[in-house]
Structures are given as structure tokens and as C-alpha cells.
Image (cartoon, rainbow over all chains, first blue to last red; front, side, top):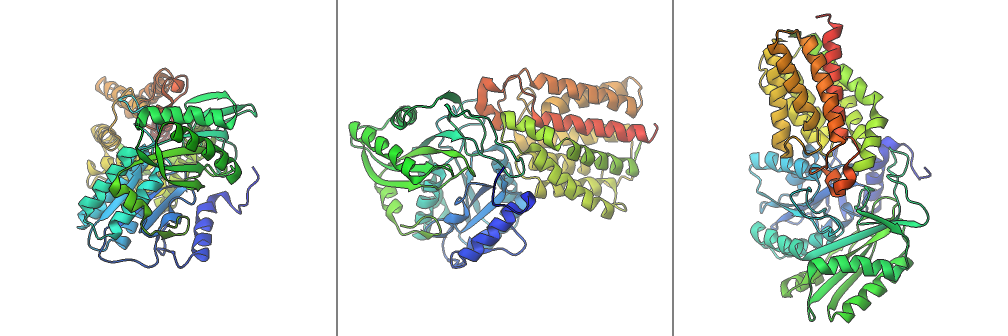
Length: 330
Length: 212
């Protein structure tokens, strides 16, 4: 393992210190907690809190700010934050209009956020939650925990955040977030696994000739392993899975997000994007807005995911609304 | 009968086991999960062991509740809420107790497993903690009803727990991250069922140490 770290036990803490030192105008750390909140707390709006394990930077602290999140709760690496931390975040950001929790669909995240919501409700804070589950690689059936929440979560932050800035009620913000979740689909691929510092070795083995399709964002194995192919062929495969699930028709409008897993250069992400746009053009699906970059990473994994979000008039307007955060500006 | 000293000893022994098997549990989790179970459990029980010296004058229920709270706030992931809820729930049925009858021990285990079922919304056979915990508790109840001592019962419980761990190798995960693998989860033992089997091992060793 070759990494810029001092102590595997202190990675998250030192990273948070570094984030706050770099961006004090955006984020403030709650003293004694692993919680980042918006420095310019805005009153009179629904507050939005998200979180999950660390290792996905810039998610989620990088999206705290105007038009997106009010608080982010990073847990240990790839480990859900604990209820006490989430509870502190809820109390800190609540501005009297309630708090929406954006939770990715993982067993641990759901249980910890659920316990935090119980604590907050006991103190009279209005809490609602949504669970993102955009990953089409995982079948949503009785026999699984359901689809995972992956990079599409960032578009939920963006659009729910924009809705909250309009002064909407928690019910309205919740409904908009649910609309995004119902219309966003993602699938990812890994070329090289990631190494959790405390584990000291990669989460799985992948030879130079192989790729792991249907990969999640925690270094967990994907759904299928295949010999590596040309970029266009990989995109064809991922887009086929996404489009089969989403079933857009000619004339539909979508947002596209090409997300890097942490160790894939922008050069390769743009090559993937090129083919994504060709496929959508062939199908007559109009691309309203494209995002290319690292939004939801998996430490040092080489890989990428493709996210499509089907848009209507409301989602289009909210997608373009002003956002000013460390890692996402509009 | 279990004394407070034995309960504290059990918690200490279990913490030692989580440190000792940190890598093994992590390796099992890397095969079908996200590869942090041993790391998380060890972090939680390190925090518990730092807290234990301050709990000596508390009743058993308060000790178990404090252990549960510590786990909830330090373990994270799914194991934190699950193990934490189990210890907290076990504490609630032992209100004010300074020592435990065999029936108290059984009630605590049953309350604990109820907490895990509630928090995790799982049942037996889904490749989870429950697959070693439920058979272990059943075996303990049966052994006690046959007139055995708690030490003998816990021996039977541990044996049943490890059989449950073996059983998890044969089934598909339908809860937790391993469920994403579908049939690819077959052949691997569940890390949570494994850490739970060590809990019964720790309980047995604590009972044996006291020589009853």
C-alpha cells in the first residue's frame, strides 16, 4: 500500500481538518463531531443532510453549500456514520422547517440514519428521509437488499437542494427528491480495485486483462467479470443495461453524469462520455446537461459510472438553479 | 447463576476476541461485503474496553446498555446498530440486577435477538448474524431445560453457533451487502454470523473461568 497517510486510524479526521482549512467559507466542522455544516447557514428553508462512509470524496462534504446540502456526515471509510453524529448534524442544520435525510440504500446507512431520525423526532424536529437506489447492476427483488445508491445520489442532492432553496415545505422537497430517485439510473465498471487504508490491501483481485462490471462504490465485487474491452464496447454494455431499465423514448430529455471512481483520469472519462452521447443521439434522446468528473469516488479505484436522469420541466429548472459548493457549482 | 464479574469478564473476553480475529473477520467481509467487519468491531470493542473500568459499580442492565450505546456510536456500518441494539435490549430485561439466574441469561439473549430482528428487519436463513445467534439460543434453552449447568449450555450454544456459521456457507445472502452477489455469495461464510459465534465462545469461556 502506497498512500499519503500518517496513521490509518486517523485518515478521516485528518482529511476533515484539511477540508475545513481549505474551504472555511463553505464548510464548518461541528466541534467534537465528524460533521460538516454549511458555513453560511440559511434560515427559513428545509435543511438537507446526507452522509455515508468516507472514501467517496468529494461526496458528501464537497456538496455542502448553497443550493445543495446543509450538512454532511462522513463515517469511517466505507462505513456508515453513527446515529449520534447524524443526530448532531440534524440539530445543527434544522432551521425550523424540518430536515430531509438523503440516504443511500445500504443496510448500515439505513439503520444508522433511522436511529438518528428517531432521536431527532423525540426532540421535536421534523425529519423526512429518502433512500437513493440508482444502481441498475443490482436487481431489485425480494432476494436482495434492493438496488444500491451510487453516483445518482449527487443529482438528488442538487435538485432537492435547489427545491429547498425556493422555500418549499419539507413535503414538497421530499416529493421532488423522490421524483429524482424514480428517474435516475446508474451503472459502473472497475478496472482496478481500491485499497481501504486500514485493510492495507485491495478489496478484490483483478488481473490486467479483466474488468469488473456492476461494481459498487465500496470496493465490493461487482456482478460480472469480463476481459477488458475497448471503451466504446464497455459503454455499449453499461448503456444497454441502463436504457433497458429506464426505457426512454425519442424526444425525452436527460442529464448525463460520467463519474470517475478516483483513479481514472478525465481523459478517459471524456472518451466514455463521447460514446454515451452518440448512443443517446442515435435513440433521439436529448441531452439537457452533462457532468463529467469525480463526484462519488471509491478511494483509489480505477473505474467509472454512467448516470442518466430523465428530466421534466421542474427537474430541468431545478438542475440549472444556482449551486455553490466546493465540488459542484452551477 | 452469573455474577456481575462474570458479565464484565464476558465483555472483556469478547473484546479480546474481536482484536484477535480482526483480520479474519475483515477477510471474510472482503469476500462478500465491503471488507471492514473486523476493523469496525475491533474499533467498537476497543472503545468498550476503555469504558469498562468506569462501569464496575453499575448494575448489569446499565453495564449492558452502556456497552450497547458505545457500540452504536463507534462501530458504524450495519454491525453498530445491530450489536448495539442487541446489548441495549438485553439490558432492558435485566433491570436492577446484580446477578443473573439462568432464566435471566436466556431472557437477555432472547431480547437481544429480538432487537436485531427489529433493527435489521431480517429472519433466519438470510445469511446474517441471526443464522448463528438463533440456533445458539435454541441450544442453550434446550440444554438448560434438560437440567444442565449454564457452562454446559453455553458449550452447546457455541457449538450450534458454529454449525450456523457453516450453514451460512450453503445459502444465498438476501440481506446486507452480500445480497448484491446473489449466487456468488454461496460458499462464503457470513462475517456477522462469525463474529456472533465468537460472542457465544466468549460467554462460554467466561462461565468456564468462574468454574461453574
